Image (cartoon, rainbow, N blue to C red; front, side):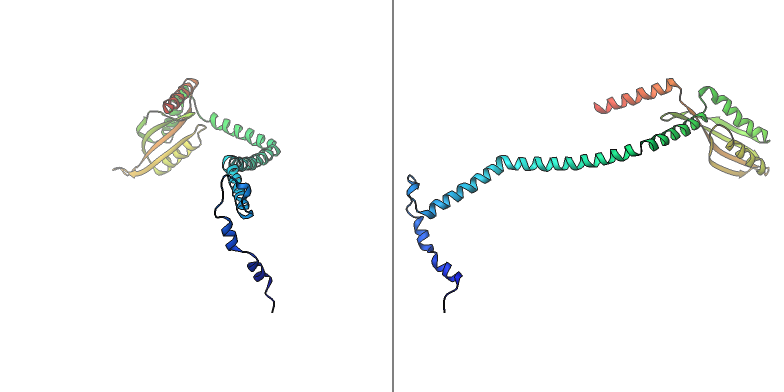
Length: 226
């Protein structure tokens, strides 16, 4: 029975001879070395060369390539988003114009500082016109917001249930924005209903107040930078 090809290949490699070739090598005359040591040195030099190129050059190039590929993906996504916005540009403009119109309508419902006295008088007259008796009508300090101010008013008045309800409806129908908060109803010793509430009305800031707001915001930003 003939030996297999694999067995023949193993018998054809003389490992002892190869190991013997690596003994007694003259480092000053590598040209006279046997074939196996010379091949081993060439393979080692090739590996070291490739490793050197990878460490000093190719590694950075691969990192740069990956970074550029990630940037390309982001640019493509940004381009798609901008293209989508460009396609819907007219619709966005229409929506913006509608928002500006609605915002302008809301602003018109806010009195300026000079008109606040008239608004407070309207609230007071709404109660007196329904036959209600004011026990407290005390405007508080303005609470300044970004482009408007809130004025809280502590209100306490007494009357019959129907008149109190009509007063609340009259306030809701006012052309200026007035809200009633923390509403409480109790009965006094005479059997009349007493309503306690905090009315809040709003006004828009004038140019001087807006300028102060901008200065305060700028000062706050500079303070954070420090």
